[in-house]
Image 1 (cartoon, rainbow, N blue to C red):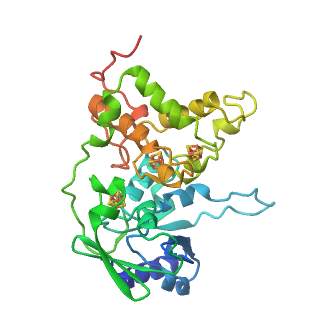
Image 2: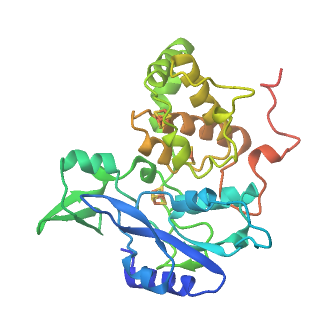
Image 3: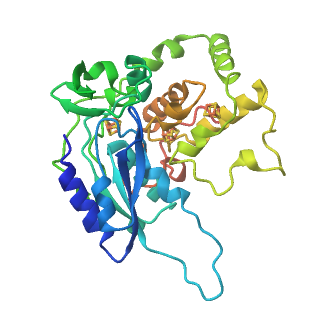
Length: 327
Ligand code: SF4
Ligand code: SF4
Ligand code: SF4
């Protein structure tokens, strides 16, 4: 369990600094199992900050969403830092962005949470359909303790845990300024079992499988907007000249969008699962991401978002890199 007092004290301390603009964290949502991202602009705002197994959003997306309006004559840019509450996977996104020079290390103050896993919002909504009253969720040994209207439900963690957490190798933040609680180590290992059935399919069956998925895509771009690593100033899908992808929602354009995005994230995706979580059509986007992650690990022994000093995969070259695929 995360000590919320310690978390709020850390937020207060951070927002009290003259060089910090605001701190992003989590607060209780307005109903049911909802938890919302929240901002502290003053030390008083820190009192609403929480951390529970419902805090699933990857807040690393926020520094990349910063508005940068044109400056008036004589106006100086606001270069103050952004404070961020991060879990292990979220911290990997920050590290990856720093590697890519999207952010400088000194742009952020990182409040790290050693994480023991979050709840998959879809699974808990299925378990308690139509739940509108605000609930309390805690963790106790290997169970989630859910209190609804004073009634306590103890449910095994395995049943509700987000898929990404079942194999999480980096539950503790890989980069932080303040740590809430103690470092934890993972005993889990990503075994990629989930993508095995797909890997065993013939090329035709794989194509068939993905066509069926991609034709359901409505091109809402929620996957892009929730992804901390999708931060290009201009996304290729918004370009009109050249128009790489037309506006029409059909299988051809949808396939182009989903495959281009997956490859654009190759060696960069840190597996936070936000794209799949927010997809209104339930596309299994993590299967695509995990397959690429596995191939990269096997070919280049590379894991994204671990070391801020390291170069990104596509920016480095080793003489013994595999090259059989080069024509
Ligand atoms: S993937 Fe790891 S760090 Fe991220 S929420 Fe799950 S357990 Fe926590
Ligand atoms: S979130 Fe889902 S439906 Fe929307 S563009 Fe992405 S894959 Fe398509
Ligand atoms: S592609 Fe999906 S899993 Fe990968 S970093 Fe982006 S949101 Fe997270």
